[in-house]
Image (tube, rainbow, N blue to C red; front, side, top):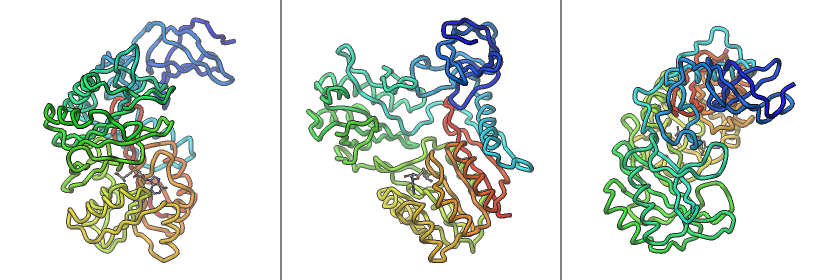
Length: 451
Ligand code: SAH
């Protein structure tokens, strides 16, 4: 019998999808934060459920050879990175195994499938081009930072090893300006106060878009704050006030007011330039995105007569990259502003054979099929929840030769691959790419061929 309060010595045999160490006591699975395969640890049982228990790490008796000292001083509080105590090489191995485990769990036929090692980063720091922090007041002090692991409590940080040095500088100057100009942080309980969040977006030149999320349009001394900020940090190219008056944990609201610059920044992927607006999706890790897209294009193995679909196209990044290899590419995306950006991006890059359709993929794809507009190659890059059933059904009906599936969630990826497999496709190759070093997230690109 396992009971709360018991002290046990256990071997850690695995790390689960949340980055927790896994051990077994008799037939019971026990999850332990900050423990890693190969560790022998002493734990206290802190929660017992029907099929599993949770343990708190008390003492490491024997260290796993992959255990390292976390390179970030905020690791023990911050919820941003879960794997900071694991050697980078072992993280890459963990990510490959996660994908493989999810595929097997979904009963995908992995026989004859090439599963490549995770493509990692040479320098896995300061890679994020977007960070979002909340602003709160605690004991009369202004705190700016990410959320704690598993809660909506804000951790007070002075720097983040994942964002650029310039973004660190903006956070620290802004904190002082909020105090100087008496801007009150928003309080979720009383629903009073002004500033809720700050979002920083950077490009390859380290230029910055700063988004200040406020609870209403009223933002005292905003001109002075923006003036001081932009004088201090030359890299700030644009500042946008975003209004979020809803009682929600979602960061951004619907209205943007440009306070400085033109409300956009530009960035490049490969040879292409993209315009980025405050609410458009853009891959977070530029260096790895290039590797990811290169792989996707290699798998697509396109030729000049091909019609290609880029489903869930965002601002058209993949569409523009494949355009030169094909007769025509159709991009489909639900966010209207992203489609507007995608069309501008096509113009900006002199691409004439890309057409962008705004709407839900699950509605647009069946519509294209009805109109007999079929694709030779379909690339999908859905959000975490994966493809809607109608999207999978349309792909199967269209009987395209190839499907290239780009995914940020191995679990929904595996579910969808199983459905495609049942509909006549065979999984050929799987390539995990590490877009988010130090976190449990894993990006994967897969090639499926029509049987
Ligand atoms: N391929 C792009 C974007 C991938 S992220 C890139 O690499 O940059 C997933 C995209 O799917 C987001 O832009 C999101 O707005 C969009 N999306 C989410 N649900 C959708 C749906 N039901 N139909 C179409 N697009 C959707």
